[in-house]
Image 1 (tube, rainbow, N blue to C red):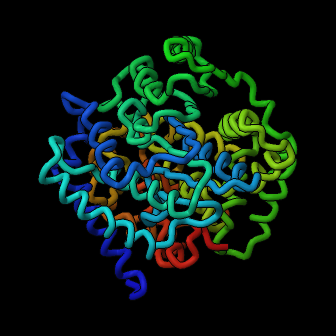
Image 2: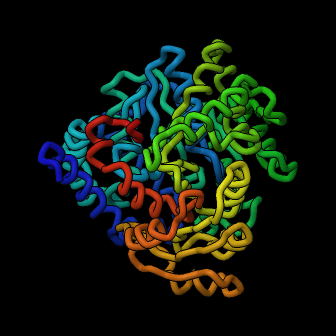
Amino acid sequence: MTKSFKKYYSAVKYLETLSSSAHDQAYMKKHSAKPLQYLERTQEFIKRLGNIDRGFRFIHITGTSGKGSTVSYLHNILYKAGYKVGSFTSPYCTTSIEKIKVDNKLIDPIIFSELVDKVKPIIKDMQKDYKYGRPSYFEIFFALSLLYFKKMKCKFVILEVGCGGKYDAGNIVKKSISACTNIGLDHTHLLGKTLPKIAKEKAGIIKPNTHFFTTEKRESILKIFKNICEQKRTKFHNIKTYKQTPLSFYRHVPMAIESIQNKKKNSIAPNYLCSRMTDTSGKFQSANQALAVTIARYIKINENTITDAILHTQLPPCRFEIMQKNPLIILDGAHNPDKIKSVVHNLKNLTYGKLYIIFAASDTKDAKEMLRILLPNTDEILFTQFKTSNRDSFKPEQLLKFSSNFKNKSIEHSALKALKQTIKKLKSNDALLITGSLYLTGELRKYWIKENQILTNRETCQI
């Protein structure tokens, strides 16, 4: 532990202790009988902090996949346009400060610890005297982000929904641009087991008399969005084609691949280059780009600024992030079938010998379907698990049963041992994909990029 970050680690430990409590776990497992209490509690917390949600222009983004990428594109567009912009995202991969960013830097870990100290007395008071008790881990982090954005005098604030939308902490904001990337089957234990139910939950972020944007294609889902927008007198924007994304972006992709291929053996590849590799066909990320671009055009950002920002956006870590080559090692925190499909699609644009996979998943995820998509493209898979205070992973033995028809499989309970064992097997032209959970990829990312590096540089990737 680096001495200068002692206060930061202490603050993180305090927050993680709260997240693992029965008070928080009740929400993570299932919505309560009175879910509106979460919004009421968040509003009370923000009020006791001095109504810190005032004075910003908000953009609230939900969806099953692509939220983080869309936030990154939009954040960089606004930053390049000269605005002071803050983003609150979830979850983090390696260290807690990754959730809060202003302009091109993550929150200072020292300031983070000071803000935690500031909210502690209010958390304690609410535990004693508020009818719904203290705020949750997520609600506290939301408030910490607003405190920081206020301190940094942000003009725009982009909020990524934690789960769903209707009861998301960001829904206390009275007016904001809202957007939904797409609808898929994820968090079904909380949001419902059908696409229409999930769509209605996510559409809960639509605010009255504002604007709502989506790249969702299915008419049945769009009908739900349209009806809610009509009820709230909100302008509905359906982005039906992705040709609006600056075409010059795609001409730069081969340069990014060549740059990675020219890197020294086993060197860490820059994240902004790795992220561009996911767009070699423009099939998946182009939708996220188009969503960000369309919102930016509504805000009246200059076209040249938009193009430049899209080209130079560093996507979040563990999104098809290439950590080294020869052999090729990729981290992707895909944790639902739709995200896994994107990963498989991206793999088809790479050349390698054998494909090895290290896989773990939260026990609330559809791991069986994820493996059904992954395994036909795999030579060998190793099942493991991750350690975190607020999520339970499938036991490797359970994952083994989900892949009964696949021969080349094994288990290793220690994720780090699984990584080291697999690396020893790899030949220079082979590839290793680590996937199934952001908790797994974030844990193993430390093998290449240490937490203290991120805390020191306040960037998610060191070049």
